[in-house]
Image 1 (cartoon, rainbow, N blue to C red):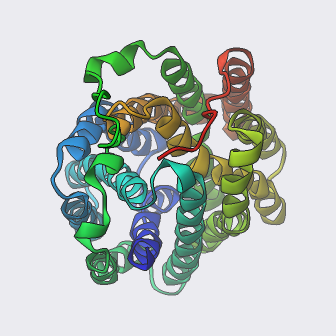
Image 2: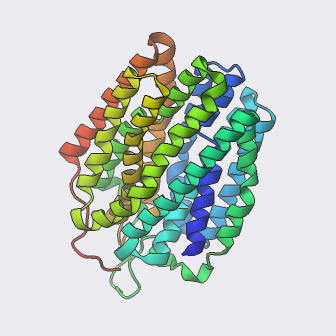
Image 3: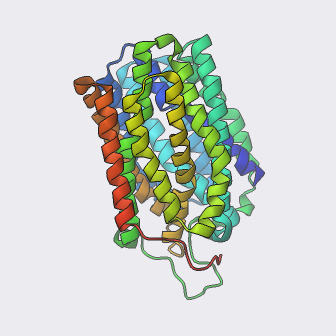
Length: 395
C-alpha cells in the first residue's frame, strides 16, 4: 500500500510536465495557437482510439506492475523529445507516445488499487490515490514553474525525465503477490462458482455506462483547453512570468484535491455517487464564465479553486462509478477504456476548437463557449444519470 502511495505521487510528478506547460513552452518557441492545438488534438485522437485497447490490455495482463513501469518509461522518452528538438514532427511523435502510455497507465493504477483492497473499500483507496497524486502534482508544478522561471521553459521536461528513477523504485515496492488478479480486473470472486465474466461487447449495451461516457465527453470538450488557453493568454501578456503563473494555477487546485479527495471517497459510500458528480460538473461552467470575465493573475488563481473541487470529485468518482457498473464482469479496465475514449473525443476536439475560437473571436468568447458546453454536460448528468452505488459492499 505504501509503495502504491509513492508510485502515484511520482507518477503525478512525471505527468505534470505535460498539459499547460506544453502550451507555454511551445508559445516561447514561436508556435501558433493552431499548431499547438493540432499537436494536442493529435494526442487526444490517439487517446480516443487507444483507451479501450489499453484497458483490455490491462485486463489481459499477467502483471499490472510491469505494464505501469513500461508506461512511465515511455512518458519520459516523450518528455525528452520535447526538450531536445521542439520541431513539429518530433513534438507530434512525442505527444502521441505520451498519449499511448497514458492509455495504459491510468487503468493499470486503478487495477492495482482494486486488486489490493477490493470493492468494499475502493472508494476510500481512490480518495487516498487522489491525495497523493495531487500533492505530487502540486509540488512538481511548483518545482517546474521555478525551473521555467530561473532556467528556461525547456527545463520543465528535463525534470520530468529525472523523475523516472524514483517512480520505478516506488513501483518495485509493491509486492506482486499482494495484488489479487481477479479483483484487479473486476471479475466475480472465486467463491461465487456460478458467476462468469461477461463478454467484453456487453459493456457497449450498458445504458448507464454510455450515458456517463456522454457526460464525460461534454465535460472534457469544455475543460481540456481551459488551462492551456489561460497559459497562452498569460504568455502573450507576460512571457517571463507565464510559467510561474501557470504553476500557481496548477498548485492551487492540487491543494484542494489533497484536502478534499479522501472526504469525497468517504462521502461516496454514504451519500452515493450522483450528488458528488453533480457538484463536480456544476463547477466547470462557472469556472469558464469567470475566466471569460477576469484577467488579473490573483483572480485567475481564485477561479482555480473551482477546478480543485471538480478534480477532487473526478479523481475518486470516475473510477468508482466504473467499478460499480462493471462489478462482476471481469472487464473493469475495459470499462475505464470506454470512458477514456469519451474523454479522448472531448479532449481532442477541445484544443482545436478553443484555438480556432481564440484566433477568430478572442479568448473571452472562447471561454464563454466552453462554459456553455460544460452546462450541457451538467444537464445530461442531471436528467439521465442514475445512482450507481450498490446496495451492499461485498467483495
